[in-house]
Amino acid sequence: MRILRVIGSVLLLLSSAYTREIIDMSGKKVEIPETITKVFGTSPPSTYMLYTIDSSLIVGLNFNHARGNNESTNMLDSRFMALPVVGGLQGGGNNMNRETLLSLHPDVVFLWNNDASSQLAQYLFESSKIPSISVDLESVESLPKAYLFFGDILGKQERAGILSAYATAALEKTQAIVKTFASKRAVVYYAEGADGLATECDQSFHYEAIKFAGGINPHLCATKSGLGLEKVSLEQVILYNPDVIIAQEREFFEKVKSDSRWSSIKAVRERKIFLVPKVPFNWIDRPPSFMRLLGLRWLTHVLYNTPDVNQFTQEMKVFYKLFLNIDLSEQQINQILGHV
Image (cartoon, rainbow, N blue to C red):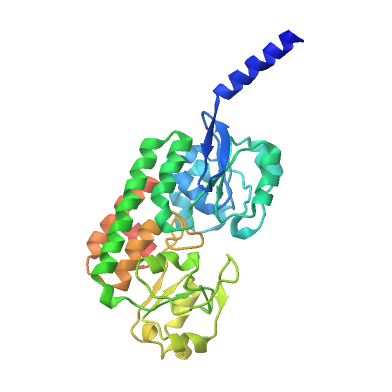
């Protein structure tokens, strides 16, 4: 019996030598493997951020990317595109295939702080002995710290540090531009849906990038759920009379220009309607990913009508190369920005 106890103690010591305790971004203590080679993100914000650090670590997707934009498909790593679809907890829901996830044997799972309830996460991961780590990705201002956190967890400090430094500089540059153009801040209606009659409350994280870039949200309300997409009437939008309209859907973007019902709105009259770029991931929202760092630069460019087009396209090239290892051509830039 004594020998068995000694053996057990030795095994415990050996196992603990290969694990470490961390405190995640929600303040929870989590014991994780010392070396991590396989990870899963429960929603696109975390999955996409992991992709920029080391896509080879990701074991599963939240949805089938092959069904999306062909431009995006061609830009993404072929191994990533071929990964099994696991699902996720995005939007407070659960479409995750637990059996598929378990078969992939991830070392850790990353939870976006805005993911499903802790009880659901506990059922899915803790009961399966998979360490779950919460990461704060809700605010664009959290991205520099989140990159450093990912780097420490994954042993990718150098790569994550470079991306974090870029994120910090992008935020500082945006704040400086907004300060310079403080007297020219625009009322910005965020048009969602094919009819443009869904939007976000002023405190919604879905509007957060536009707000950070200096946009003034006229839709003052309390968010009903994390999903957002608050329905409004055209009469409300006419009363808001926004200076600028940021459109999520191309269908609305194309038809609103010639729709007489919208013609009295200042943004429509002055042709200040802009379609959010979405290649390879949405630059602003849905999901609110690391692409917001470039989205902020685009927003300040269109909101304040800054003339430095060449400087902006050069920044696009730098961003795509740094974060996604993509060498953008002029044709791709035009396609992404909707010029052709």
